[in-house]
Length: 253
Image 1 (cartoon, one colour):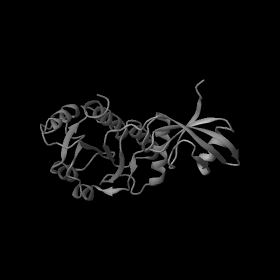
Image 2 (cartoon, one colour):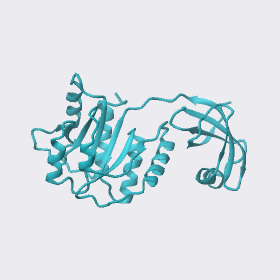
Image 3 (cartoon, helix red, strand yellow):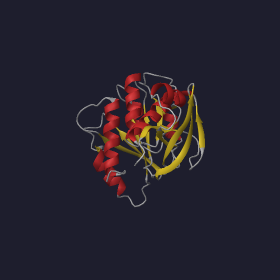
Image 4 (cartoon, helix red, strand yellow):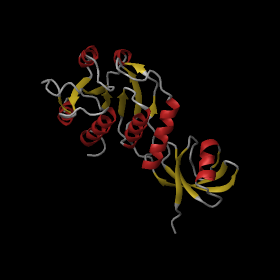
């Protein structure tokens, strides 16, 4: 009879059969006080490197659980290399955006400071915890890397030459040099020497100002795109852009 997992958790420990792990802090509290699990219960563990593993709780105490790793139940899967660059927005919508970007498979999350950015500082640990929770729930085997906020001009000045930027230009609908995102990805994919690495850049509430748009558009690695005739909120634009990228260039093909 298959053993039923009661929870799926991210851990930083190496995972191998027979390895014992003591879960304390938030993880121990969650298992013992929230899920109310005890000895004999099974859970799934992942660490972003070793796939999914079935583990068994041996004993529990006050806010802690001793577990033993039993068997590998799914090998590690490769995932597309897509960075998501975003201007920070208000907390509830930012939480939603981080969750959905994680569920949709981005490999890196990086906030970008722009002229119209409403927030000038973020707690990276909060973003990471949000991403961990989303990965645990959606069955993803890796976590996106969370990097600190960076100014737009600094980001572009030190941009890697082997990665294209899909610039979601909310002011580009009637610009002949801006293409619908699907067409732009297909045309970029036809370039003989085009890189396989991508990033998506989405601006703040109110969009990029004219100076920022010029700075972005003149960058050699930028592919300006439009997400359609409607002006989307930043969190909606994130879901739309990442979904379309996964459909045309990611692992949804």
